[in-house]
Image (cartoon, rainbow, N blue to C red; front, top):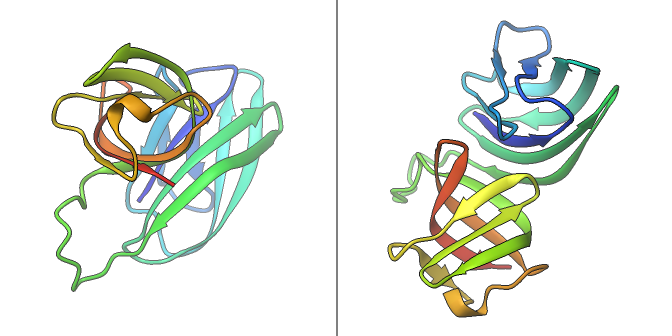
Length: 165
């Protein structure tokens, strides 16, 4: 599975895995998820208003969860951040259905426990159920590099865990 957010000039952009029928469309916030991505060297195709770009993603293993933040501009696409989670059948983690994004915080607002901010173009929201590792809610700040885990709803990542990197 590839889970991502894209920064581009247009929402509703088509995102496809080259050479397959796996495709989706970006949300208003520029987020997308591709399921059933075949293992191997993967290239993503971005098409939309003023956009026609290819992005080599590299080798994806069966069962991997790849989370990327992408910038797309015309015929250019680049990865701003990437996180790969290997599917480990012996792993006892219960957060397999969660999404992840990592990068630097911007646009921080609100007060603990209800903070909102962006990581790249991904909107993130915390709540009283968000857990923190190596940082506290009060200590998060703009430009701090973190990893946020949670689930997407209405284009926002509702964070269940924030970890300072």
